Image (cartoon, rainbow, N blue to C red; front, side, top):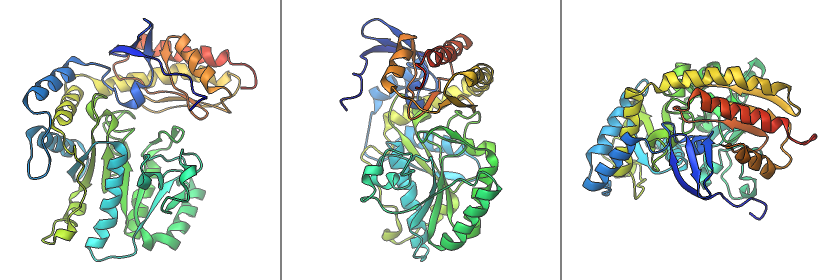
Length: 404
């Protein structure tokens, strides 16, 4: 894209710092799109990767299996609530959502139920960049409007945030419930669609709605999973167990590509059959990659051996304390915080490149998009580093030209 500034060359990373090839050092405020929750180059993760690389980097996950993948599957099942216990590995978040969608459709077909081939997702939602996932993203707020004529048509509606919208949602389901395979949502925070936040009541409404119409409930926890909102998984905070959950991003601590689609025993039982056609025919080449699974196991270790959720709580408190000072700045329309996520929403961003450049000049790596400036730092970020990040946001936004 000709209008985008050239990328900055990176020489190395460590902890919360990005060292550029020209010698400058930036405090990373977004943890490489929310992945590096333990910071960069954590020695425990690095050691696990080196040891696994020496033993067994990869073997096909068809007819063969290896211990890192088995161990990771067991650990995820133990960490997730309810009977979310059947794990399907893939290599990206988008693909994990595609797998969840295929699971939902085929679950009903395997039971002899036809006609349930549509999904309900929500405005401001984002679920990936593949054909299937683009079709359940917000077509207006998302990045996929050009492909509208190509995409399958599903239902993108308002989240039932209040009684009026809940009533409208119920009316919609009354009309379309028998064609819905699953309701798909990013729980608590809709990430790339604008960092929109909602409370646990909304998720309980969705669980009740899915049960009422006999559909599955899918939580896309690719952004919020692994502590980002304050609990290990967002569904814990809501006390809701979805039928399927998708995980990625922080699963490996930002070190390697890996994703998981985890289903309940009930969903799995819909595929456990003597008929070959009842199997879920999806087999990514690098499915269950041993190196990535070893790294993910090391990342999970750190939630047990280091005080990650306590650190998230401390970051949340500091963001609540420091970001509201932005409310009085020109052009700011909202400030919101949940867990280790802080958002300053603007009426508009006129010159996005100039704003990004100003943050780099302030010594921080903050990447505004749409009309928001946000922080999703590594959980190991110190109070001084968080203060530097929030201070940079206040300073840079205060210096913006009037009207932007």
